Each structure stands twice: as C-alpha cells, then as structure tokens.
Amino acid sequence: MPLVAHTPLPTFARLRAEGQKILTPEHARRQDIRELHVGLLNMMPDKALEATERQFFRLLGACNQIVQFYVHPFTIDGLPRGPEAQAHIDRYYEPFEKIKAEGLDALIVSGANVTHPDLPQEAFWEPLTEVFDWAKRNVTSILCSCLATHALVQYCYGIRRTRLPAKRWGVYSHRVVEPRHPLVADINTRFDVPHSRFNELFRADLERVGVRVLVESAEAGVHLATSPDGFRVVFFQGHPEYDTISLLKEYKREVMRYWAGERDDYPPYPENYLSAAAIARLDAYREAVETARRRGLPPPEFPEAELVPALDNTWRDTAKAVFNNWLGLVYQVTDQDRRVPFMPGVDPDNPLGLAF
Image (cartoon, rainbow, N blue to C red; front, side):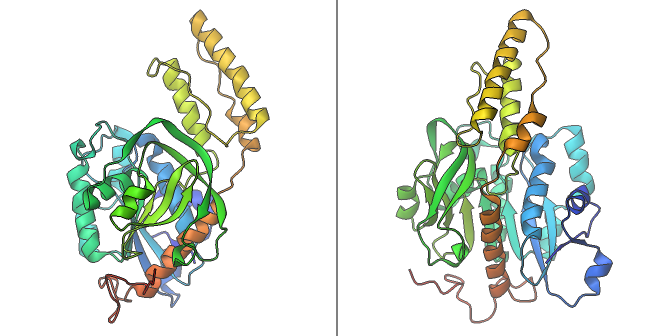
C-alpha cells in the first residue's frame, strides 16, 4: 500500500513524479486501512541526506502489505550540517521528543560519515545510543544500515568492527544461509547487494554473541543479520536501498576529491558494477583528468549522462522483498495501538516463534 504524504516533504513529490502512488492525508482518512508509522533516523551527510530519504521511502512505498505507511524522518545532534541541509531538517524533520511522544511501529537507522577510529568518540554516539535505548523499549523492530549496524553491534555486544586493507566498494553476489527465517522468505537464494565501507563485522564474531546471520557473500562478508531473538534488531552491512546510480555518483565524488588534492590516489572502480564499455570510457576520462591536472586546466566534465544508460540494477527486487517481509512481520506482531510494541501473548524474546 502507498505512502501517505502527511507533511510537505519534497521527497513525496519526487516519488510521485517517478510514478509511485502517494496518498494525501484526506484520501488516507477515507480508507479503512490500518496505519504503520515508521521512523527514519537519517544520519547521512548533507550531500546524501535527501537521496537517502528517497531511497528508504521508495522501498517502504513498494511494500505490498495492506497498510498505510506514515514515515517520520528525524535526525540527532552531533552531525555537522551546512545551512541548506539544516534548513531542510528544520522545515521537514520531526524532533525526537515528538517521535517519542507519539510512538513508532518500526525504526530505520541510516549510516553516517565518521571522523574518529573509535565510534564512541563520535559526537553523535550518545544521541544515537539514546535513540536506540528508547527504541528497544518502545518500537517493535529496528533496522540498521551499514555504519548504524557497526555502531549498535559495538554498543550492544561489545564487538568492534575491523578496518579492511582497502575499501569494500561495489556490487557483490550473496546467498541466503538461513532460508527458514521469515525475513528471507520467497526471495532468490542468490542475489546482489551493493557495499561501500572501509570496515567489517565478521560472521564468527557475530555468531559468538548470538547474532543470527541470514545472508552473506564470499567476497563482501555478512550482509543481513538479526539480534538473537531473530527480529527486534535487523542489521544490514550492505546498501540494498541504493539507487542504480549511487555508486557512480560516489565514484564521481572520489574523482573530484582526487582533483582537489583531498586524496593522493586516483579512485579504483567499484567492483562488479561497470560494464567493459563503461570502464573503457572512464579510462579515457581519467587520461583527460590527468592531462588537465598537469596543465592547470579545469577538470573535464564527468561523463555521467553517457554511463547511466549502461548501468544495471541487480538488487532492487530482492531489497523490496526483504523490506516487504520485514514490514509484514512488524504488522503481524504489533498491536493496532502502535504505542504497544507487542500483542498480548507474544514472547518479546522470540516474537516470531522461531525455532533454530
């Protein structure tokens, strides 16, 4: 069922223009359909703030559950913001105090950029753990993305992520390792997921503390896991929410960082993402960049328009299916009064009745 545009957030108009069905509040009120209220704690940096909104809203709106989705974006202190991003937050985001007062059925926590090697040193660490502590007591299920997964696994289980020798960057094949779990019901046993990170949580460390690994990759490691109860916290290390062009735009940013002297090496290509023709075009672009740099000329225009038609999205359908499964489970085990996390008779330590 569709998203409800209960605020003037521009993301609703963007998604409607893409063809996604968006209900007005008036239309929603005329339908006798249950509501689910989902929070989005958006910690992404300014350049990715609104794109991250659209990516997660798009996945939520693609769910086929018989329910109306009200999505509540908010953020926390400790994240540096420029004036434009701060104005967007001030105008369209909800204060955490309002979120706490009105309640949520589910919560999504995005990734974030970091500036310290030890996550508890980050200025956002205490605000993030405050949100998490509240959500554990009051929200049916929490879905964590990438950096949020690393932070909350360390907070909950004391497992620190490991720095990789090189950035894990590209699109990787994954397989389902626990097919009985309802989060991976009716999805392909093998599918792709984008990753973009410098650090990793390893399967052996996660399983040592009872975290249940559901999906992994031989190249990229664990992607999808859950807290020991199987549902209350869902962990993503990859980025199934990414748009087809997300890695290309990230590559472009890294090239511009090289041009500006913010990195010493020319960025490598994202793995398993670009066609041979696209790589040949980018090889030629690199030569043009290096030549212009030596001659003190402006950088040549990045050939994004030429490359986009050749990009493939090999992860979106599975991402939609996993989100649909997750929200369907939230619907099943949440009381219709969304201030009550579990229906009577549901065991909070094993809300899905899993038998592993």
